[in-house]
Image (cartoon, rainbow, N blue to C red; front, side, top):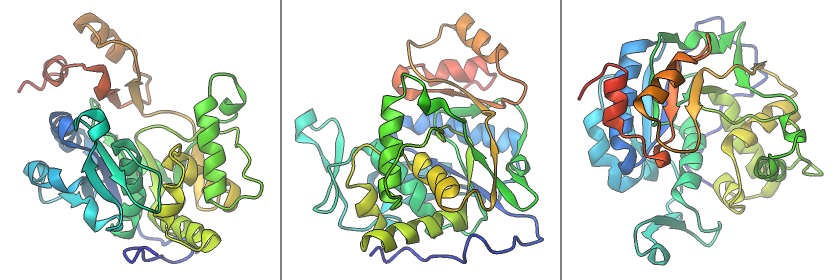
Length: 308
């Protein structure tokens, strides 16, 4: 079992009358450092209701990201979150350009897999009630108070109803099925709901209870269970746990996306970028430019009024 995991009280306990505390959680890595710096600056400028911002990185990136620390921002080494038997190496199959995480208990994992594991594991480390997940290639453009994610003692669970019953979501259906298997849902069916987005909230005590269930159902560390299938989504696992195991306890649903994301395609021209921002929905407070698309972060800074 993962010795760092300490389960909290049951998720069905009566909510505390106090105002819940919230933390933003960002998993990042060295190539996204400047994007993460921009995220931090826009959080400090636009976001309220946050007790702390956790940045979760690989051990070798800790020193670089510590430049971003402040009185309310902490960089967390993945070695303090994940079991030591999951070890990272330069991958010779990619001519040492990429990293691979290896163990005898999981499939070979890439950085995007391990970033998901970090986001789950932070619940055993953090003290805040609500964890708000925000990718490092996001920038806030408008005021945002995390209180919108909490209502009458319940946390907002992002869910798009029924979309996995449509064509074109094959990978999401695989993730949903594997989530059901990890959670011990018998049979491990596919949910029709999609839970994947950025700028979403989880209840910390619910995450810990989810990990406890996975370990109880499988008799081994939750990291080894989740990592035994290379096709997984931490958002899908959490969403299915809340809806299929807890029957929604402690949560309310919302389908509006607070961040407008440019998921794929080519880097946007200046005019296209301005149109992208102008077309943000009234509820949207942030934009996401997927880092693999290659939009220059300096251009993003200039176009949103934050020059280097």
